[in-house]
Amino acid sequence: MDNVEEIEISTVYLLVSKSTIPKFAGRTYIGYTVDPNRRIKQHNSGEDGGGARRTSNRGPWTMVLIVHGFPNNISALRFEWAWQQPRVSRRLKQIPELQKKLRKESNFEYNFRILTEMLRIGPWNRLPLVIRWLANEFHREFEVGKKPPLHMPICFGRIKKVKRKKKSKRPAKERRNHKQPANP
Image (cartoon, rainbow, N blue to C red; front, side, top):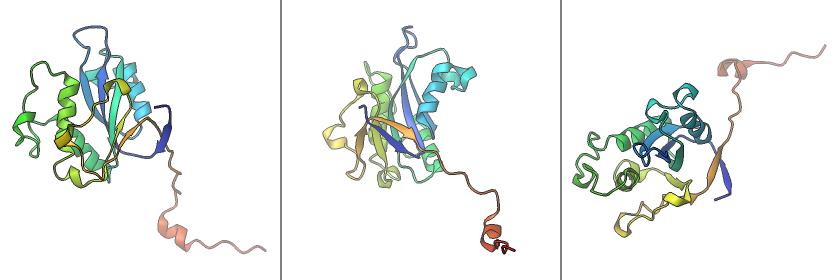
């Protein structure tokens, strides 16, 4: 897992708390970002450092897995919301086994079970999503009958955000009609 892949993405991620305080240990957090490396630093620096209120003073947090490959940020945000709210999401509330966490099931295992179902139902089963494991210690194999569609690769390793080139401040119409001055 030492290889670093450079990508420009909308990402939905799963964090797990490695807190030494038993009350917070094993808690999970699902979020959205375009820069996972920056975001995990924010979560671990607390609310004042840009982290979410729910993760503040409950860490350190480990980013366990990310899902990327969404066509736009809206579909990624909808995926994030459904993963956070399986009892309310109109696509997931009809799946009875997702409505409650099983006895002796950790928060991580419950969230992984939700993800497993989400990747197999529409509209997400048609998207070119990539599941990327960032922490080996949490890696789980998908159950035989519940594997994601074949067009969704499962990858391992860290990622690095690619910086976009800055766009010109001139409007597109002005750039097209702009004529170079003649050299005198």
